[in-house]
Image (cartoon, rainbow, N blue to C red; front, side, top):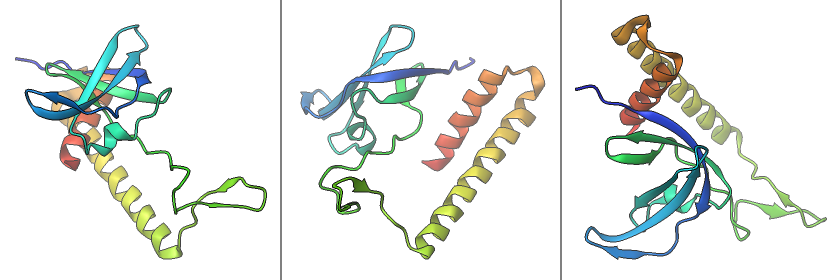
Length: 151
């Protein structure tokens, strides 16, 4: 049986926060308005940083499979106003965090490692499925394989 995976783009309509008591225990959810007009609910545990980092109005990409919608990539959380990683300049504007040379090298190495893994996943999907895939299918399968390998 062939599994169908689709990519969707949407905007966060309601961010997560309120904790619900469900048959699966305590859960939070986030509502996403998709570009096709449909709404998707993403559920997670109360400590799910990926869901908690989503803010109202933020653009996100979702993957839909037989089980439902999942966030394709973790959103990078926006720093809070009280974040110790930022400071205010003399004009009151927030200044970005500055990294040491060692931190920059570590980040660069991690990005390089992830890009090599993504390319490897892309090459493997192309080799396994041949040229019969559409670009969208190739991209979807590559992202899925990449995300699964990062877990």
